[in-house]
Image (cartoon, rainbow, N blue to C red; front, side):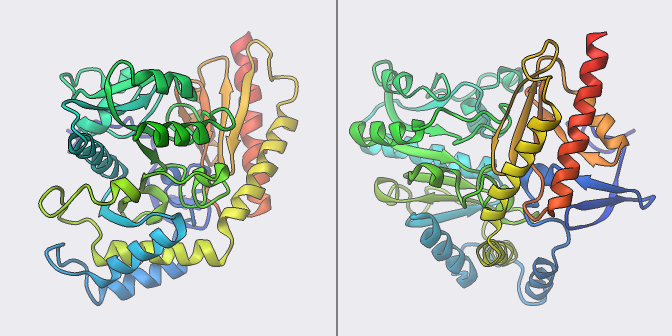
Amino acid sequence: MDPLIPTYARLPVAFTHGKGAWLYDSDSQAYLDALAGIAVCNLGHAHPEIAEALADQARKLLHVSNLYHIPIQERLAERLCATTGMEAAFFCNSGAEANEAAIKIARRYGHDRGLTEPAVVVADGAFHGRTLGALAATGNPKVREGFAPLPGGFVRVPYGDAAAAAAAGDRAEIAAVLVEPIQGEGGVVVPPAGWLRELRALCDQRGWLLMLDEIQTGIGRTGKLLACHHDGVTPDVLTLAKGLGNGVPIGACLVRGPAAGVLGPGSHGTTFGGNPLAARAALTVLDIVERDGVADRAARLGERMMDRLHTELDGTVGAHPGVAEIRGRGLMIGIELTVDAAPLVRQALQQGLLINVTAGNVVRLLPPLILTDGEADRIAVEVAALIRHHLAAASV
């Protein structure tokens, strides 16, 4: 009997070690990683500076709990606030926990303003996590199925539609808007230009909190430190995780302005969040990202891969069956097919390439941001070849 609860349909491979953009299995077979642990290992595997920082911190102090001052956690908060325009941080262990903190902030903020049933505007197709509050905010009915009754207090509107978000205020007592700048699990969906700026103006006008889930888009993934920086927008609440620790579990909920004074002693907490090991990992990640221009490189490599994918798949875009769209920003790329794409994951694995399929028919590429030009080209060429073969088989 499998000792693990079967919450994952795991692929038939186990990795023993990695280096940069490569992973190796127990037979020393090499795999080019175009998933990065689902946008987590932005700086690749076994990064020597991160490994040394973790070893050094482990020799000093791993955990003391948040009953005491943790200077390295405070330094991390100062650093994140300085680079994001936020004012204060709460640290936890995952993206779902960061979003739970954001939802609690929205609820308390609404009650403080006299709302009896404060609600949060969320989007169709969104994914915010699998805890009950985050699941209720998630727009995918399939992942919510079987877990009712879910918490209420969410008003769902079409993604990328600021007018629909404004109209939500006519139906409920809105306290906040929670959205992803680019939807990841929803299929790498890029919203219309200017949408975040419209939401920022709407929230300012109505006194709502703008809460951005940058768990997948943050820490350089889209070609800027944060995806919202492409639009010059600063939220009231910002959630981060994934790439912040490069594999060490850490999440962060950052606040500013009207959201900064909402939570106080006893209103929220965590046992492990922001412990010295996680804080040291995140500080080291930020050092490397800033020093090495990692976000700029992600922007350049993303353009290179998108151009190559368009070239390689020319003639299949718009065909039936074919490629409906190639989209993304930076090294967050989605290739939407007109047929089921799920078989491509195992086919790629057999060829030593790790990819992902989300939303059923979208090949999602989230490679490490430290790819070489040659590795970026190889991913694009091999993925395109797999897609062409898959489409040819589907048309028979």
